[in-house]
Length: 315
Image 1 (cartoon, rainbow, N blue to C red):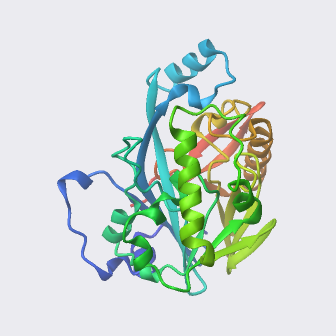
Image 2: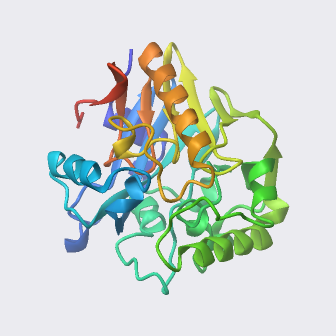
């Protein structure tokens, strides 16, 4: 039985340790707590990332893509992608799954990179984080660790879990199959290089699968990037998968559309379909980086496509 009990989860994550002061610019909810068996989970919004709508399916017929956007009441040219990270507490360990965008002044993305501020608002001290799990090393997943002053607040024995194939890929990344806006390849390459330079002593690389804490298992899927991974939480008969960038909002209706950030779009589509079918078969919960916050839901099969079924907001 899943208990979406804010009070229970907040207490176990020490969220009540510090008073939260409301600010005029933080009226929008930025965190959502739930429990997966005995595992405490907190989805935290890193903000939003405005991107061209073509990024949702650059291999799609423009007219069909425009019709999908219209049917979803989305603007035709650009819209805001959610940026979600997750904090997990299991077995005495506090695990941050992905670290948000941080800040890149050259890309002019002022509404993203909110993770550190929002962790502080939730009363989560960076020094309490024992582990970081990276689904991959795109800048919107590692950038929060590069914010000035963050490394000094992290514990010296912090372990950062990432697939070995991902670290290897960013030594000489291939962007030949991507379709990103100008400036993004250079920014991604630079962020990955800075991350490895600053945190190489903290990296704990794995090949295919690794248990980070009781019931917290990271598994390499590939596709989006060669080392892209998903994190499955399982406890007491409940389960939730954080899918990183394996699934985007359009991926349920159009799982074969290629996202502009995918380094191997065809493999990414195969990974997406396989993962969605697994989740539809088990009924387990799904959270993903770029699904609308808080992005907690389940997957249903809808003929040759899928259907996103959000959980009822429990507050």
